[in-house]
Each structure stands twice: as structure tokens, then as C-alpha cells.
Image 1 (cartoon, helix red, strand yellow):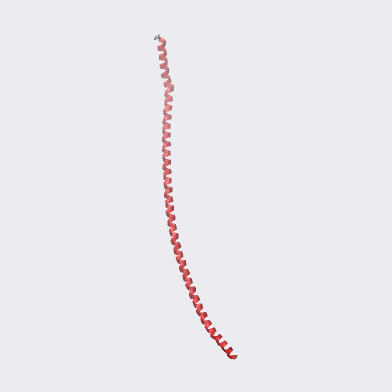
Image 2: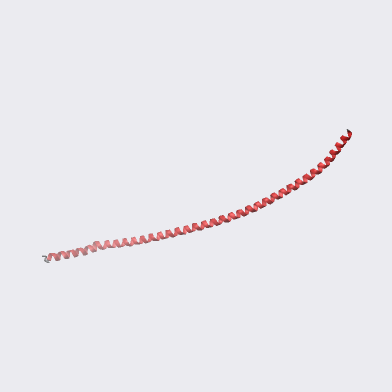
Amino acid sequence: MLSVDSNLIVVFILIWVLLIILTKIFFNPVRKVMRKRDKGIKKDRKAGEEAVEKYEEMIRKIEEDIRSARASAYKAREKFEKEAGKEKERMLTEVSGECKAQIEQARKELNEQLDSLKAEIKSESRVLAEKIEQRLLKI
């Protein structure tokens, strides 16, 4: 059977004294360091999450800017293509008009030359006819 003697009380008191001393000297500083570390970890985790959120927001903004830039470039391209088509039509019309004018001018010149050549041939043919007639009459 167990009996309560003075050794048990002394051991019990020593254990409590040791527990109090270890708590003050060892456990409390360790707990304090652990609390600081936990606060630091929570702070770093929160900062990391905020950084990830900012990163994702920046990515979304960049993607949106890229989409709007592409749409703007597409619209500008369509506008330039339409303007180029209109300019091409205008130039073709202008060149066609110039060609028609040149053709008409060439026709006029050819007709004038033709008329002058016809008049020249008529006059030469009369002269030739007269020469032929004189030769025939001489024979």
C-alpha cells in the first residue's frame, strides 16, 4: 500500500517548482517566439495572397487592353482597307478618264492626219492623173 510520507510531498513541491521555473525560463519565451512566428507567417501569407490578387488583376487588365488593342487595330485595318479601295476606285476612274481623253485626242489627231492625207492624195492623184493623161496622149 502506498503511504503518504514527506518524500512524496517534497517531490510534489519540487516538480511544481521545476514546472514554474521551466515555464518562466523556457516555455514562456518559446511560446512568445512561436506567437511572433505565427504572426509573421500570417502576415506573409496575407501579403502573398494580396500579391497574387494584384497579379491576377494586372493580368486581367493586360488581357483586356490586348483585346481592346486588337479590336482597335482591326477597326483601323478595315478603315484603311476601305479608304484604299475608295482611293483605288478614284485612281482607276481618273486613269480611265485620262486614257479615254488620250484615246479621243489620238483619234482626233488621226482623223486630222487622215483628212490631210486624203486631201494630199487627192491633189497628188490629180497631178498623177494629169501626168498619166499627158503620157498617154504623147504616145
